[in-house]
Length: 368
Image 1: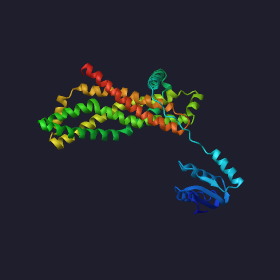
Image 2: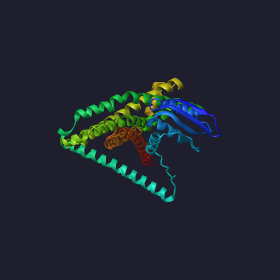
Image 3: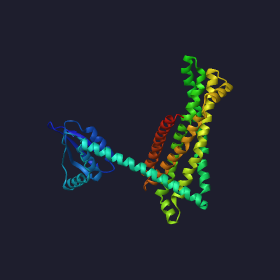
Image 4: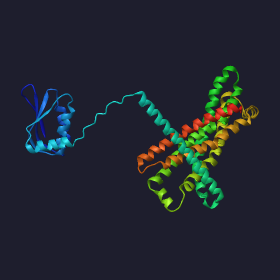
């Protein structure tokens, strides 16, 4: 296809000749785009030997691309004019959405809807917690229904495989606390109190909190993905058809595995954090391991350990219930699975942090 601008009056004309078909559409589009100057107002198509729907699409697209200017198509035979008209009618026209007006009524309506959705979501989580407790009680009364093999498998996935990342994270947190604490306390000649800083921070808050956040990222997503995939493949419907209770077979082993393993992971995190802090205190401050251990035993109350460990079962329930609930909300498409998996991780981490804040206020009120 050849494109040229014919000299004439002030209104420029681009003469198009050759075949304007699907085989030349890429070349034609690039050539027309480079030839469209401000003075061009018409395309002479009398030299076009053949025109198909792809060529018609290029011409109409070029017309619409010239905002504020009109581009006339001349020299068309009746068949080409009819084809252009048909393609133009078939091309989608973007709808102009009027900008939404922010009013007080609309703002209150949106706030109310989100509040109701939030309350319904919390009630749904409470309902799933009730389902778990009910099925757990039934498994105690009827041990033959309990899936011990599934429990052991999930304990390995949730706990054993998470030990390296939890231990490394806690070790580094202990190192950072000791280094930053020594930098500040050295100004007051109170370097020895870095032991108290590390012990209280790790045992009471950071050990179990950061462990729960890591477990929420690993486990809530895996629970949602596993249950959601079964939901997509209609395996859960098949379980119900076979008389198998999905809650007993899917929820109880997973949540119970978290209840068993999260306190153990929290204990490992505490030990790793103390070891990292002791190592950095020895390197940076010259506090020997014996002095660190003596100061730790004398200056740290056992209540700090109890406060940290009491949070573990609550965090485990939150992570497990959120993951199982999100998995059951997956629809029959991959987009829904990805969205619910990311929602489960965000929700679980947010809920764990909120629960930790509630526990901190509660224990502060009790004076523990």
